[in-house]
Length: 179
Image (cartoon, rainbow, N blue to C red; front, top):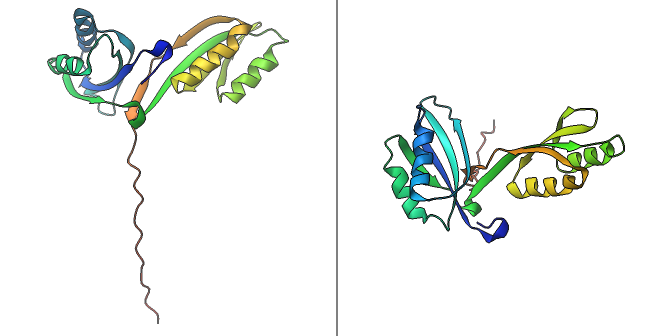
């Protein structure tokens, strides 16, 4: 997978026990080994005993096999899945506060609509906008609002899940009894 500056990344989803210190142990493992984490997102799953981490790892700093081998050594790790870019659905969330004078508000609002974003807060001379989507979409939006003046920006990091199978269901003819 290619991102800005031609750096390649691996996307891993890691199911872990939902216990104190697990995130610290995973981050420590990466730090000790000199592996670069490009993005990290953690959240509980539908089962309160587990959390899911989405870790985007810089492939140049860490061979995938080495990362998986090291993660598997951690007792709290239940399952590790690589999500190849062509086989996954990735999303990220960004909130950005943009300067928006009375004259510029219409343009910022139009850009927000084009990107299917949402204005979540409005002040006298600024607006906070929430954008969700593929990382490239967020990059494009921030590039386009930059000329207005970005006051603050925050991104969540990527989350990813494997794409679902898309096999057509076979329909069979149903015979009806005629009276």
